[in-house]
Length: 313
Image (tube, rainbow, N blue to C red):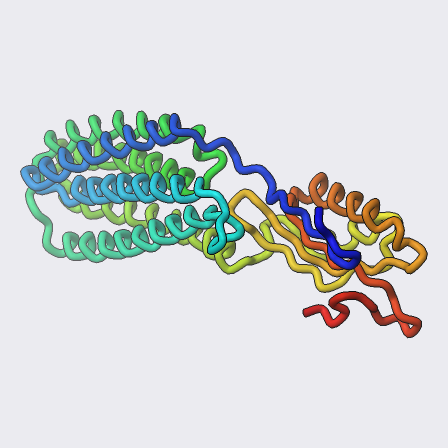
């Protein structure tokens, strides 16, 4: 592997989940359907006077934009590592996720403002128009969610889009209920109330998801991992005297990386490759860390380390 005696570096960054053009076609179809639905809802909302329907249309448009950005990010993420991006381009999807979620927060706050204003200035609404278009929206949102369900299991971007579409389906149910109440009882305030519910759902989702994407971009320790547990497991490998200067982070959403200094006794220097292999196996099997850089050192008489980089820098 071209290693000098004090340094062990694995060049396999670990596998990425399947990412095929078939998935891209699903996204393109979902984008087209959401755009058509958005146009229909905006037209219906304007003619009926329903703010809730317009709110749902804006959310659908944001879903189409999120899917488009996710599609672009997926394609960028497929590009292999190069001299300028030695870890590859996988984090493009995280950048797309942060952009999409930030935009959703803005939309959610805007809808809350508009709904509060509508509470004080209720407008006449054509209830049947709202109900009919919301039923169509519910059908299309359900179909779109089904298109992205499988991909949502392995991608934060697609999972966010899936949850958005699912929330749209729930919002459409709310619009149907609100429109029906307006038809039966002329409760105009229900339109603003449904809008607030939709906005709160959008904000809740964005606030929950965005820290996860930022955590990865900030090279945070992967969720569910504890550096102390990883260090202890590494120290259990036969021949390891001590482990220090441990750093763990995400290369992208699916791949984890680690670097650490490994102290071994001088008598075990001829076993360095064996120890390295055991450590990498431990990291991969127990903690799903597929990429690791291990700096090997030997202790001095006073207990400090001697090696190519004993300072830890």
